Image (cartoon, rainbow, N blue to C red):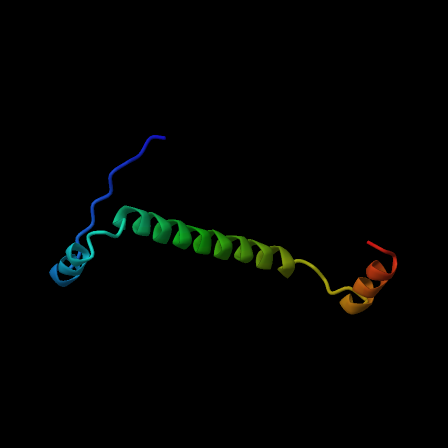
Length: 76
C-alpha cells in the first residue's frame, strides 16, 4: 500500500495532551477520523444526488403503504 504524508499544525495545548497519552496509536485515531468524515461526505453527496433525481419524479397515484403491503402479501 502506498501512502502520502500530510502535515498539520495543532495548538501547543493539544500537543501536550497527545504527548501525555503517548500510548495511544494517534495515527490510527486520525485515520479513523478521516475515513469517518469521508463516509459522511460521500453519504451527503449521494443523498443530494437522490434528491436531485426525485425532483423530476411525479408522485404516484397509489400510496406507498399500499404498494409495500401488496409486495409483502406477494411474499417478496
